[in-house]
Length: 340
Ligand SMILES: [Fe+2]
Ligand SMILES: [Fe+2]
Image (spheres, protein in one colour):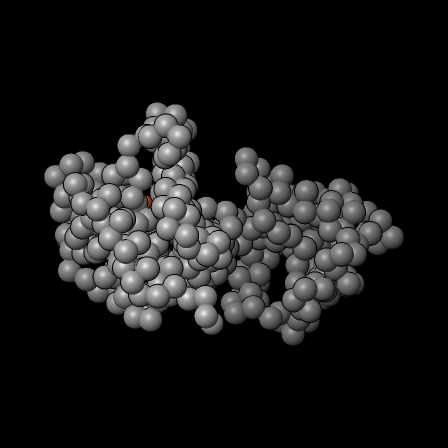
């Protein structure tokens, strides 16, 4: 462990960064973010402390040819998020240049670089810490100035952006703070308005009114054929596509779409995972049940083997014992009686 730079070396790096930010509001911003980082994680690595302190440093640094890269312009980016990414990258590059000048180890530079580069969206432990500290700081210190600058509606939007990117613990911490009530209310409303992914399940009946079940490899459970609705797809198109993909047949007719749906909420962690992967907040699934009539013969059914192990026709009376999700049987029975 002889490679840890001594405290003096770290302090003098911090002093350099401080001097650069001092003429602007970024110094206070950095210092407050660092304070929150140390509240969230008191023993944070020194590299992450530096990252929190200097994550927005580029805002205080003009373009210096041959030394610092050009500033990103909002107008050159087609989304706020892409501008934010360019902003984060520039901060990372500037701090990287300064640390190189001061002869820090490449591994230390790399750790700081990556935490700052990803500070807007996070995605790993280090950058998540900086992002969370930056978000909560906004609700503690930033929102009043934001209201002055962009009005209450602007501040509500910004607040939602700051909130939704934070992890679960930080979200809870944010909601426990005292800040503008109308912003808080706006966030709470948005949370309860998060969309559900849309899913379709086919209740496929044969000519003696048995229902087709498929055994899913992943979940090791009996279930109905079906899956997620793609963008720009209707429920009817989605179920036809899913049936074709999973059962290899399009020899079906649609009897009706049940008005009953099942909604599942992901645990927050899953929502966050999905957000980090896709950039979209969703809260799992709203399942629609489509009643279908199978017009073919059993040998037309060719199971998609990667997902499904087997299929079987089941009498309605026997359905309950194959169901594994809460409310699944009730929802399905209601759906079936709608189209009797
Ligand atoms: Fe930033
Ligand atoms: Fe920031």
